Length: 312
Length: 274
Image (tube, rainbow over all chains, first blue to last red; front, top):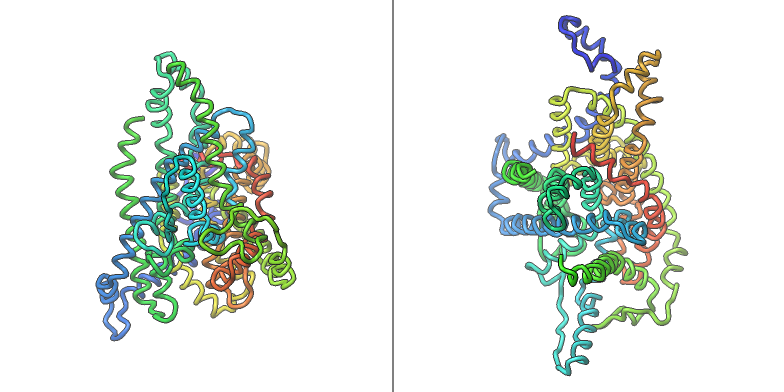
């Protein structure tokens, strides 16, 4: 593109000339931004306006909806649960994603097959992942069946008489339900995190490792001093991308924990839907969730990411 | 590393790989297994982990009822149309983004990303009310338009990175050879960016195929496949849920396994640097 590259001072005069000069570029870019304006920005503003509208009475803006959700026990629990699930998911996914990426980056026989299997969850709809996890974690589910079997095996080996009491994972509530949500989410999105870390690993040139070897860094030291710092920007991308979706966790929570442990995603859903059908507080809760995500991302970029980059 | 550690490293690596594979495959195995299990096997305190006398009863029931073919068609059509439209709209814009000065490009890309942080449900409810007025509920076009909402910023973001990695000399050379700006784009830049475009397209296709929320909001009678699964979860017996889910997942898994070799992680690298 000739124009966009070289800005010659004084060559263009006025806005009209600029527009004429870049009309092809504008025509190429406008549809995307128009789409986002009409079908994302406008609905967001809609929601914002609704959240500041008092359902009864004409006062605008009003904080009555925000006050209502803050006073609600369910909302406060949902906030705590959402943060808990998100942090748990992020921790699991970053750790396992890095581990799997390092594995797939190594050379070994059958690597192609292992890679294909590890990426399979990409093709599994989240709602199906939820159905699978329900089979696994239900009270008469298969995790308990496996644990039963393990107890029997240990008893057979050691001659003990331990009894396994079936645990209810999904409907128990509390940390166990949150853990189930984080595990289910991790199963589904691990391929994405793995791919991001693989991109980072593939971008490290062999020269860097050669230089490190000359300096005597091998094995663990090489990993900690060379690989990890170079992966930092990719970790940041993974954290931000995942955080956005982890805080907004919805389908899995709907299937696995809908009635027991509310998260903000399902809280908003239940406010919009019957029997409440209260789109005012639903809108306020949506804005609160957006705020939560923004705060997390900004804090992360301010506090964690710079330190990770400094080490590089 | 001592010799002992080195001797242990290989078996430990093998154990880790097998464990990772098992964790991915076990839930999928459960799904298929339960869908073929006869009634009693899946209930009780200790449901059996193996099916000794598999039955295709539930599969047959799901297939005979015929309420999967229509959703299958809808899911396939919507996913494919969404993918084509997303690339057609977002790729040219991503190219323009990639040729902008770094500061402006950064601002616009971050702006697109921030729009993705708002809860999808709130956007969806607002969009669904508008679409209802326009008669776009229970409509292919309505769902395609909705699926483009998250897809467009995603494709633009991935491809802005990809295009930024294509040297501007290439545009310039084509321009000197007399190609028009659009000609340059279609004949020179897009082919050079093909791997990145393919990855972005694959992700959009999978997103639409898997999507639940917009489908739920914009559907009253004509389900997509994920909706069909959700309804089964809501009211069906275990095997029925498993059978519907298996039919939804099985055909797509070989495709994912086959396509993964084209999933060059490098295509994501540009997005990180951009």
